[in-house]
Image (cartoon, rainbow, N blue to C red; front, side, top):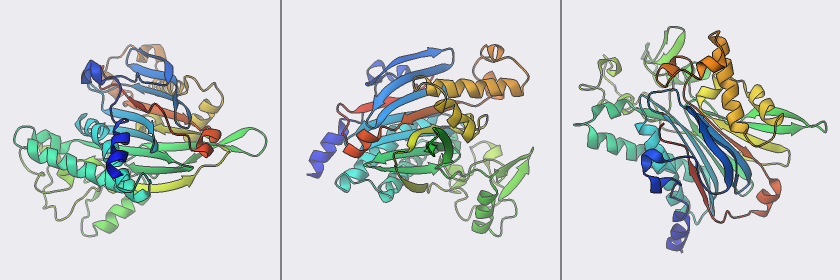
Length: 377
């Protein structure tokens, strides 16, 4: 029975665009229309997934796109992932290739039942796999030890939403309140950024003898004065002294011995029972939330048609980034990747609209949907 279930789940594991080669991978997939690009912006205005409609967009700012994302919908329900890479694209790409597959394998072991534990085990397997890759490449590509990725995952299984997070990506729920048609914003993810006082307290409690566990540099709190997030996949130079040594760049090497891992790959996982007044979910990398509040993002989605929601959010963030630098949006659009990073980060947005009739009926996506964002421009 387990093998039959694995065979069924494997139908969902191939991201669309693979036939074109990895570098041509795009957000093209089943169940949608109005996809395209505008310079460094890719978008899918609208599409269908197991529980309703979705909208998806990503804009590149780095020399190589470090954000990756995916939507998978099939017998297991719906799986959404937003992976915000740092130090390079390698970890985010690895997570996009392996986390969902590990989730499938763990779910198959529980006869298709999704739990917080199966999601946690998928994260652990992905972390272990990436660490093994770092070990394998240490002699030829030691820099990969300094690459990591934030990971935000949402799983809709039956009538429950599971949210698992490492780092500072965020999912926000748009929820109808009262009988007036008003909508409120509720954040459903816990963030792990040293600029949060709770995260600094946690780090200090875990490392009571390390006075430099968090350091304020140029107005930004950083773990060991280096990295902002306290949890991630990868960043193994902050998890094992085996990799915190030459030949990695000196700026990553710690002067004192590492007696225990500084960063963690343990996700914060919560579950939320979906109700009829839960309207939509906004999954986005930190690049969006740097410029838009939860309330502003929810208002933008609520005040416009479903189609184009993700692109609308990305453009609103870009307009705000331009305003902060006292420049016009039209001029910001002309700035090329890499230089663009001085104005904003890579930004990924996925909006899921919730069709509660489909959710309550437990509809199985057929054919399965598998969509991934572009690897690079």
